[in-house]
Image 1 (cartoon, rainbow, N blue to C red):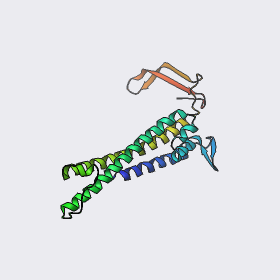
Image 2 (cartoon, rainbow, N blue to C red):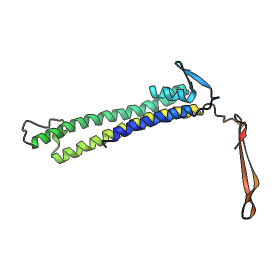
Image 3 (cartoon, rainbow, N blue to C red):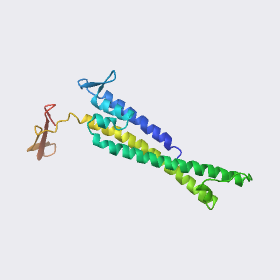
Image 4 (spheres, rainbow, N blue to C red):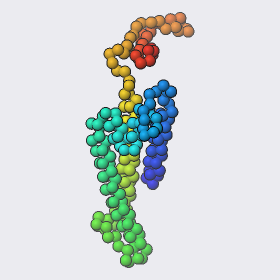
Length: 201
C-alpha cells in the first residue's frame, strides 16, 4: 500500500488532464462565459469551480440539494482518514519502540494507550499494518469522492442545454437491407431527430 499516495496523485493528475482535454474538445461555436478574466465554456467553469471548492460546481448548476451529499461524503471519509492516521502514528511509534527494546534498549517502551496494551509483538505488528492499510484506503476514497463531484458538475453542465422536450422526434419503420450473399434482407430503420442540430441519427 506504500504506492497508494502516488496512485492518488496520478488519479488527480489524470482528472486534470481529462478536464483540459474536454476544454479543447469544445466546438468553436460553443457559448462561453467569464471566470474572472478567463473565457470558458459552461462545463469548464463548473469543473474549475468544483476543483477549487467542492460543491461549487453543483451550486453553479443550480443543484444545491447535492451539497449535503458532497460534504457528507467528504467529511465522513476525511474523519475516517484522520482516525486511522492517528492510530497508524501511535502503532508506528509503538512498533519502533518494541524494535528498539528487542535490540537491548531497555528504556524503549511502547507507551501508546492502545498499542502498549497489545499482548505480543506479533499482535502489535498486525494492528500496525492494518491501520496503515486503512489509512491508505480512506485517502484513496477521499480522492475518488473529490474527483467524482468534479465529474458530476462537468457532466450536468454539459447536459444543461440538451434538448429533452417533446419536440424531439423518434421514428422507426421497416426497411430492406442489402446483403452481399442474398441480395436483400428485412430490417428496421430508426431515426432520431434532435431539434438543436436538425440531423437524424
